[in-house]
Amino acid sequence: MVMSFSTDVKNEIGRHTNHSRHCKIAELLALVLATGEVELAEGQTKLIMRPETAVVSEKICQLIRELFDNGIETIQHSKYIEVVGVDKTDQLLQTIKLSDYVDFLEEDWLDEEELLQIEENDITYVSSRGVSLQNCQFPRQVIQKDCCKKAFVRGIFLAAGSVNDPQKAYHFEIVVHNREMAEAVQQVINSFSLEAKVVKRKKYYVVYLKEGSMIVDILNVMEAHISLMDMENVRILKDMRNDINRRVNCETANIKKTVNAARRQIEDIEYIERTKGLKYLNDSLRQLAEIRVTEPDANLAELGAMLDPPVSKSGVNHRLRKISSIANKLREENCF
Image (cartoon, rainbow, N blue to C red; front, side, top):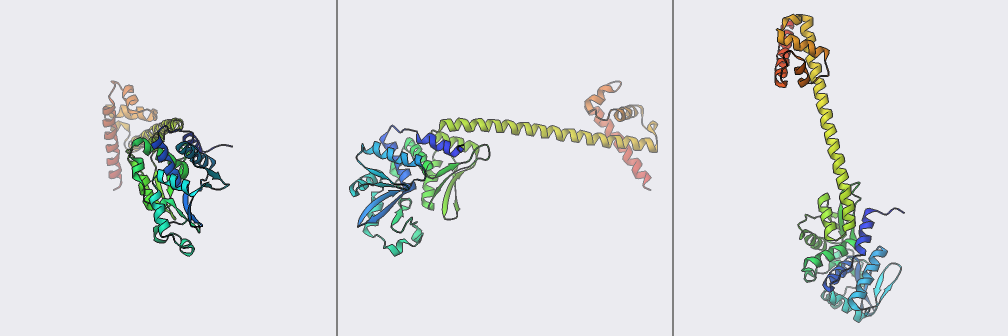
């Protein structure tokens, strides 16, 4: 099975290890925001995470084990991960600074009929009993340091991002549920001197980069160095091909220009010969006219070298212009 470039990038950053606790918290925050929802079951809050790939699922469980020394148990179901125990859920949410949002929900939990109303009051409900964590106020205190911002970008891309194969097009994006979350992700990315933009796509919001150089930079931010080198190799080859194509097109255009100019010059000379004869021209113009007719593919420098005495390119061009002027005057005279 051939993997996509996006999958390669995710597999690479999925293997990345954060050595600092604060970076692990930042990455887990991104993963929980992208995949998590809180549900009220029997009056108690439950944290559910719905990762779309095994890589994301493994990363979530790995970070929880490392941060809590196996003190928080998770159950991996076929389509979601559940944190076991209300106190453990509270502990995890407090660590990634989302507990205030959950406390707010518990104080005024919406009834089931209200929860079924999609996107009411700018809140996206992901199930009849759960609310997406992307709707909470973004805890910026978790990502103050650059290293934590990098970890956050890795996590949010791992769970909600994609990048095109650079052989085809340059496009990097992260898809989230609402504008507030999109703008928060945009600000984190742009803190690395990038220019991410936000666009709405159906009911989602997309944070994206389009330029190849910026995608290389964001891969560097995520420390996906192998993928970065792969992309740079592709960019170098594409740039070389584009350069060759530009040169070929330029040379082709110059050849066409030269051929067209030579054709017009020969037409002028032949017109003069038919109407007045080449003796109508002075010696220097007649010599050039005769050579031009016999050497239709020669450029100006080559024509100048064939003259006796030799003449520069500018001199040849001047004489050909005079021949053209004489031909045009004869055409005007013959029109009357």
